[in-house]
Length: 377
Image (cartoon, rainbow, N blue to C red; front, top):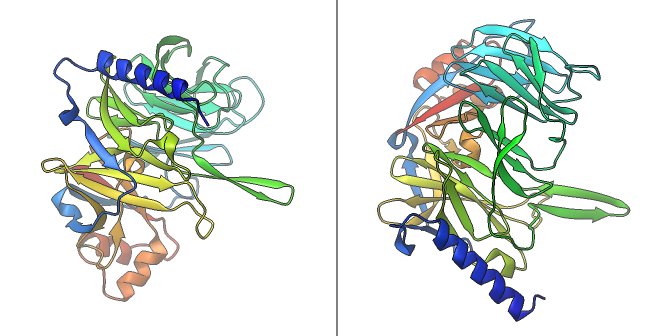
């Protein structure tokens, strides 16, 4: 147990940091507050209230086979990074554009794909691998290798910040920083308050084996023209603006350091009149970590559990969270994948309508899943 003096010192430092980095007009009433220990009522909303829905199914091509979800969705491209090293590039309307594979041990090759980021302005694909960050054109031409220090860190995350820099969360050092897109060198680091680190996962021991069941951990979330930064050891989520200023934007309770069974808060994504939040409790229930999807009315501050339906699929509910925009790198564009087999069964039951029904009825028996692109209002 921590000594009282240590607790007071940490609180004082956090207090000083919060108010020293906040804008002059920032006050407590401006901050979003979420109590993760409360039980909230359910509220149902229709997805059409907060987003325009676009349905998309990529055509099947013998040389462009993929499994699961893409790694990146942008205004103009959809990019897959497969476990075998294949990188597949499609246009947003589903046309295949390029396919390449640079997996290997040699110069300009990656061992495997840990993370894939695309810069639409320069048409460059960045592959973060255990042996560095390899940079290619979207056609597969090798261009350069970035700093070798960016290795296989558990929980590391990379995001486009501006034309010249990435925003990086380095899990080994528990640090947010800006790095050069050219060579990976650090440009600026952001020092958040420090506290005892929280691991976003549950350690399961069985005999001599150890398994870690991880929770979704969105440390960097696009928000407007900036980013939300989350260190799960803290009770505050910070907003990083394009002019590189930090300010507190959300607080949670109870204090995470005081919880015996912790609940992680994965910041939020905005759509319409709501902020959509994911809370994950780090305890094992049916071999998984329980998730609670919340939504907060921005005007009233009222908080509810999500029940989000959409007209094109009767009886089907979806959840919105930072995961919804993780692939798009765009705070106003969400992505959800719908399983084709589930859709075909639902269509046989008469539960589909509109454009979704049309796609499913014209799909091949073993065709690709259907993607929902959500253009948030």
